[in-house]
Length: 139
Image 1 (cartoon, one colour):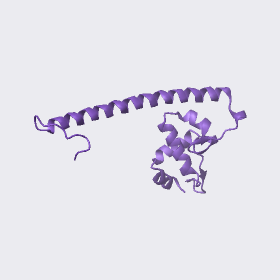
Image 2 (cartoon, rainbow, N blue to C red):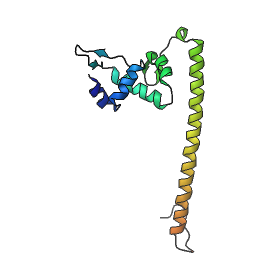
Image 3 (tube, rainbow, N blue to C red):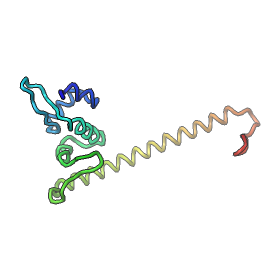
Image 4 (tube, helix red, strand yellow):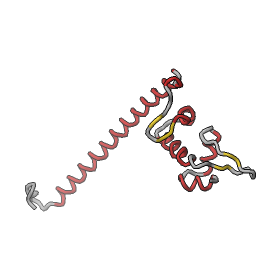
């Protein structure tokens, strides 16, 4: 498929796909006319790249692990291929991601607590003065 089709299928702009190529993340073949030609696996690869970028990884780190990804939920890398430098880099990224997850979870919890408090206040304000809520189970 050509770059426009890959862009349409993945929702990633063609300009970004060219950037991925510049970073060594995508390696399309070239047609006789010079157009990029992507194989069937490119769509999956682009989705993996987007997911890794969305999680906060840099293109440099993605370039190191992408060759070992064969599905979204796992990295297939023989233990002998994992250098100490790459392991340290991945541990650092995992720690950084956990910090982001913790922060996001805290923000989510604060937002939900705020919404709960606002709903409770709105419910109290809707009730006529002196009227109590019906006991649980009555209705």
